Length: 365
Image 1 (cartoon, rainbow, N blue to C red):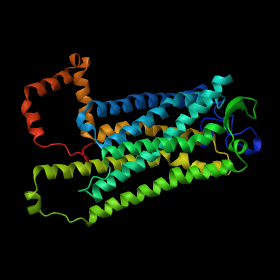
Image 2: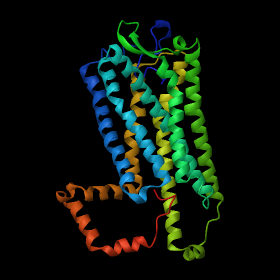
Image 3: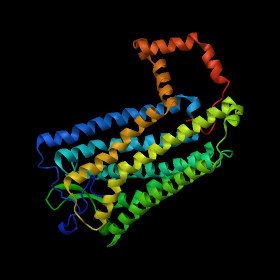
């Protein structure tokens, strides 16, 4: 991102460098492997995990709810972020030197970084949108504010806005030699636009993509907690008189809210250092190589953690995975899946019982 030098060199002038371009070049082989191996694990877990979540929502009709569409959007953004990880691993191995030259190198420089940063924007906006969705579900439980049509419009706007925010980077990225005489992917918004554009863009990014979304999210969840606290707690008699479906819906809403709350908290913790370092970048303050590694590792860790949290905190996603596996050829060779499939065939009453209690259209993920 202008969030420079996570993956590219920011400028050619020594006086303006915000990182040590020689970072990671002279590390021992053992240190390089200690950085690369965890990234390989992140890449595999993220690719598989996010693909599985998308497949579950795509294959399972009952999972096609608004909150799950937003979760799928997060997964798509995480996959784009994951596709950039090989470039990051090349940094841990060889430093910030750009590996491809010529016209092809320039195209990779512009669009690889642009894709990565656009996906980060989309993730942030999606987190805020999920928070809004949960706020309306709790505060206005009898009204459907975000319908499926509205959801599609919001998703389109998320990506359009994300692309628009990153267009200056697409324009300002070039390939060239850095101050060490190495070929790099260089971002210099001051040269591309006007003096001071770089600092202004950093500050806009810090405020518009972290401070404001974080503040909005905190306000929304504060409103949710206050709403739940002020809501009259039913006594035992009322609970006894509640229908089974009402009790089930109440439990569903609590579980969805808990899952989303944990997702947002993990997102903020993983990306906090990434955005906090923008303050240093905006004032051209150099940071250590270890901080640069930790900054990117925590940010990319979020892409691998998210699908694991979906599966850990939501039974419907786990059941969706099991259903997909049961329909696959693997079912013939994995006894536990075959047994599960057999139980479904010999116990049709289970399906009949469940069908008596239809899924909540907006709350059931």
